[in-house]
Amino acid sequence: MAATASSLASQFSGLRREVLSREAVPSTPLFLRSVHSRIRLPASCRPPRGVVAMAGTGKFFVGGNWKCNGTRDSITKLVADLNDAKLETDVDIVVAPPYIYIDQVKQSLTDRFEISAQNSWIGKGGAFTGEISAEQLVDIGCKWVILGHSERRHIIGEDDQFIGKKAAYALSQNLKVIACIGEKLEEREAGKTFDVCFQQMKAFADSISNWTDVVIAYEPVWAIGTGKVATPQQAQEVHLAVRDWLKKNVSAEVASSTRIIYGGSVNGNNCSELAKQEDIDGFLVGGASLKVQLSNIIY
Image (cartoon, rainbow, N blue to C red; front, side, top):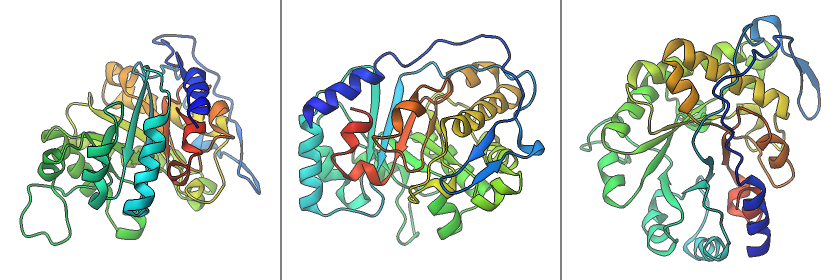
């Protein structure tokens, strides 16, 4: 595993491209393909004309979201594998264990990795049964929190405004935020990909005043845990549009500095081509982050 990890880390070394200005990309729409069908991005979902690609200027970023998985024994083994990996220095690596294992991971994982929670409450702790406050996460050594994941949106029922306020509160308590956005399959097929992503972005922007500690994760819902994955062109098209939205609605500085990462059935077989895209600044990995295969993706 260590040899594989070193090889892949070298592969991603230097991927941060400084593209703060370049010619406008053509607005010709791309044909979008899912694994089993061919879907053309409708006219309302095409990138705006004159969009300039400005890849995020930070380090390449990879997060591993372990979701509601693992036992003490399996996590002990996974942490040992991660600790054995030979890692490059120019990739930010974050892992998000289930809450009850965060302290175990924090105590045993090398400081080359940062720890993320998978959720946090909208405000200060109190009589909120089952919730976890940002203050508690900071207290046990968390640096990050994932907010807006589609499983929280569509299973738990969190809406855009609630998620935006959660993000603002987490940031106020010095937790960095992985802010997730993404459309469902029926929304993509209906030509609403950009509408959905921009609406979710607006809810974050309405609540967030400082984007320094925010990473945006574009995760098309139809690609999460399904084995389907957006083509590099599909992912780049949305990432570019989101960056342009930031430029127009927040600032050019935020647009150029904010990292926009991709999630949705990322694995060792597809990560290389995705990583070559100008506006893909990293990955949020789900199921593959629980396996040795994780080292084939980022380390």
